[in-house]
Image (cartoon, rainbow, N blue to C red; front, side, top):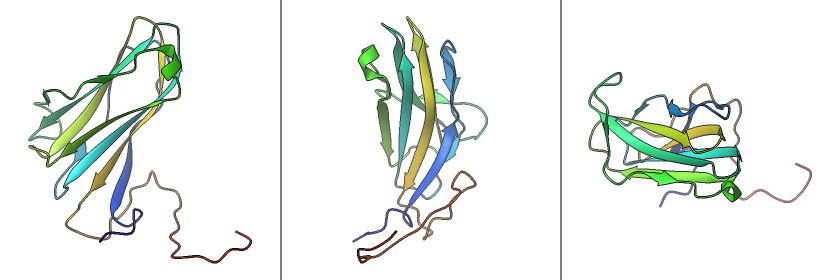
Length: 147
């Protein structure tokens, strides 16, 4: 049984914040080699009344070109009440090595805070984190006291 998230899940910010009014935004490419699944978290910021953000996934055998949308992977915010919400898309057993997320905004302005990709089930453990992680700690059954 896997108990550690920190040592078994890779975290990568694949899209920085995007100002409202930018219609189509494509994430960095995620290399899924050796992964069982990838979870994309699309974190939304402010949404103007009637604004809609739609996220979808695409895949390719090449990291730089030939991306094709994945059937049924489109998910959308439905109201400005979704501001500061998170859209999640997970691919289990990716069919091709490279994945990316496209976030499209329409009708009215939507801010995108960021998109992160969490990779799970790597054959090589523990996961070596990338430069986005500026610090991390792991504690096993810590005692109470001053942090």
